[in-house]
Amino acid sequence: MSQSEIITVMLLFHLKGYRCLKHFYLHHVCKHMKSDFPSTVSYNRFVELQQKAIVPMVLFLQMRCLGKCSGISFMILL
Image (cartoon, rainbow, N blue to C red; front, side, top):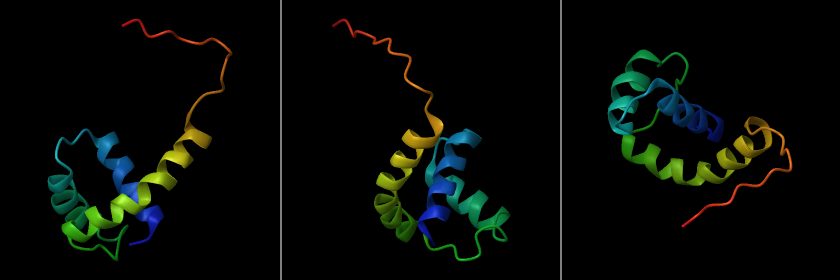
């Protein structure tokens, strides 16, 4: 699987509201989305590949999905 496919699966997992990644991957992606992801790998391999896709995913989310900074900072009170 390519990094873009792995990132897409990870984002779909969070958007669909599943609680268990393994259940989502095996029962939703591998069965119902086979045409969208023709080169699916085993769940164990997906978890290994997922670790390599975290940094590109976070960078993408920071660049494209976060709003503009308004200059207002928030203080965390402990």
